[in-house]
Length: 159
Picture 1 (cartoon, one colour):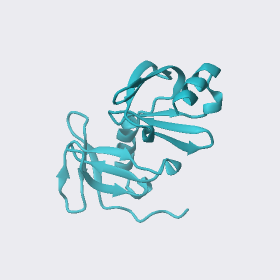
Picture 2: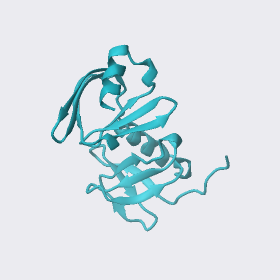
Picture 3: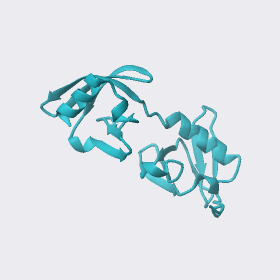
Picture 4: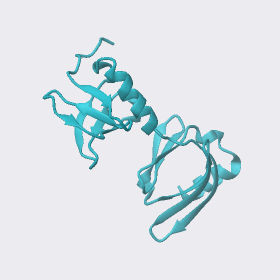
């Protein structure tokens, strides 16, 4: 893969450690947030830079196009934000009037979250599932087949 055309932008941290973007016009956008975009199959590409109000300011196809040291600042901020808990055990899935409540153990401990619709559960191929909760937090099941028998049964019963 060839190197992408360099972008004339800069990422910096403010005095409070928040990410700021200086765009190609020299305009500074304070407290921006990077977010990985779909497809999840190309997890190292396509990053959206969003304002505090969650409006997209810039879409970066390939982070290698961001010159150093800005690229390191961006990737560090993305790493802090890229929080994808891995579901290890499904204890309960409770049907509610407005969706389902999941009680699970993740690689970060026990948690409960709510899922609105079946469309919030998406297969990624090769036995992987991503579940997006009401707060837009993604949870990953990297291999449904590796779940314990009880967890698989709970998952199959509802989905």
